[in-house]
Image (cartoon, rainbow, N blue to C red; front, side):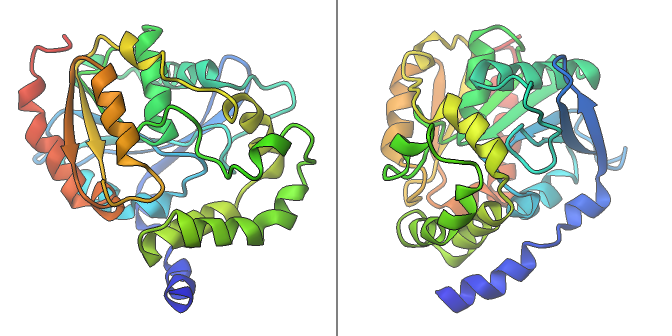
Length: 290
């Protein structure tokens, strides 16, 4: 598996979607800059919906390459990179925490003048939970929220969680080998999944991870899910080691208007399979949230 991961890492260094998309740095209300990648399909193939993609913690664009290249055929895409990612202009005065992250989504929707009646908000892992927090705070009301394995707690190695507050930012570089072992041995179901996690770890910014992690690693969000009034599509991958399907099933019981679908593997949730599932469900949500 190690050799396969090493070979795959080369493929995660370049993203075809990044070459094709338009990159913008949008300034938020606290002067933090956030990068978004946008693309539009050919007019003859456009389905008139905007797919707003909110990836998980420190996820790199190539991890979503298959998904994005398929979706861009008929969706207008807004690919959002959150504050902990290398592309953000995060400062020591920047606000952090889940409410601020959800507010970023709202501000991007406003700045890009997106019609929420045509908006599909797609979030993975902590990105999905961020969308949920914004729904509860009435920051947006998309046509269709699609939530892939939203966690009630930030996924972080238990052996490191107690030390986040006292660990210097540079310490992340020292512990990266341990992080690679944890991701490969315990949180990856395939070499492909391991490769994308490892690249995210390699590009991690210790200052940003600590600043954001301090506001996420100790919180639980179980009480937030029952407050969601929107009809949502809830996606699980029951063989995924990183995103426990038991948690997603519990979330389904808490969000009263949720439809649960198991796509089996992490690879499926990042591929054409996921895009086709969204396409299939668009008609089913007509009139439910608007």
